[in-house]
Image (cartoon, rainbow, N blue to C red; front, side, top):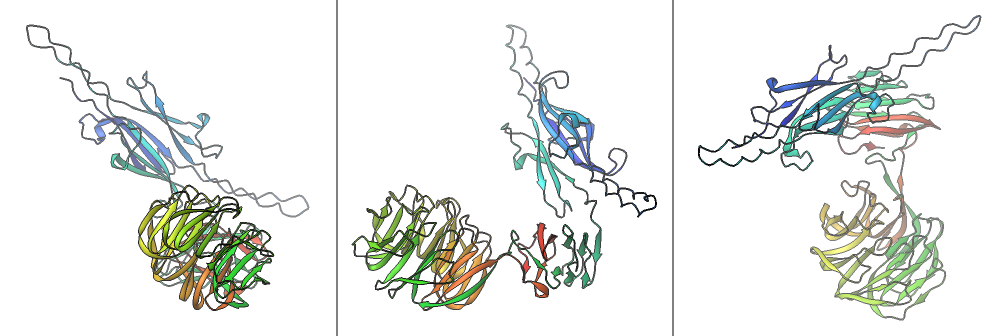
Length: 601
């Protein structure tokens, strides 16, 4: 009978600074699991190598004095120590591994390209597979017994490498290395197969002078890092006269967190920061009982329709509005991405079309209870829904229409940029999704009083609001759905082309915005019976309408309030690095947001 073969195992452990690694690192030990217990014991180790941290470069020496002239300039700082890398490759059966295995290569990344080149390898070890089981014993005296089958080959040992963000395990980030035995022989190290985890951490940047703060306020110096370590907030004011390229780093160590304050004329860009795009709103003075709105992708052309008959357009981002039509009980409107092709529908009226930004109009002569409409980016594919009627689609810009779906209480529609992905909401029924330009529809989610819909340009992310319910989202083209936020009297919702930036209206309440695909929301504007919202493709230019009130223009600010009134605050675990780029502006070039967002004023 064959015997089970021993598996090859790898064990990783931290290596302190010493003879093997001057700056510390990771010890990689390998061997066969002789006792078959799944653990590499000390007596089973047959190979040991070290993955060592690089050494930080030393500061350059001062230049010598020039003859009869000014002092020589200071030498530049030495460069950071090289990053140590590990590379694995298959080792064929041969002199190093009789049954084959894995070759483990290590060395410093001399050219800093993030890959361990052959010329950079300074250490090599082998993790070999187990030998086949022994041949079965010969049968008893008499007829010769048949030869026993070979034992199964040992399982391979695997290592995985992944980036480790700056945090409690690696203060300045690094790599996480996991190892284990590929028990299911699928070539992938599954979570259940991991037997050892170690970290190769980056050293502190050589150019950072860190100062621990236990109280404040503090005036920051350029090119300095601050560790805010207090139970109360510590205010750190930006350098008053920075040079272009100067930077400041702040990390929250204590429970009190930190605040970065500004001097007169200074501001901080918040683009890319979580919670970094604050909403602000301005009334235009154009009043009506607004029912719907649409916007071009750049926000320059917008259209707003009133349930009492007025239809207005703007060509200058909302600075001025022109009355284009009257006399229809408008319910909804949509436009192409350039804002020139507009489709508007009325309750008990026709579908109205414009190809010149609302200057002139034609209608299809229909008379239905139209409740919703949506358009593709080029305006060629349109979809319109009649309340208690069908959904109608057009592939020729509204020249002809084809009825689809069944009669239902349709209330809302949204379309992808190419018109292929469509979603329709009902009043008290399910959401319906089409992935074939409206030819067929599939019911999704449970019955709700759906009110508003929005979709990313590619159709992957869809958002749906529920009257006195939640905001729902799908991340897979409408296949599955989950509820976001708390229950409110939600009305329409709009999103940026990438689906990240959202704005949603609440009747009898506020407007709400999100910059992280609905994970978190902040309120803005004053309370009103908000009915409709629009967004430009980048999510920065917005429109909001109420049942009775002005057209309101919204902007997402991309910087703090200028001067001493502006600031950014973080909590324990939050870190931020700012660099001065001129004209009073500091730009974030790195951050860690343990709390999920920064407080921006």
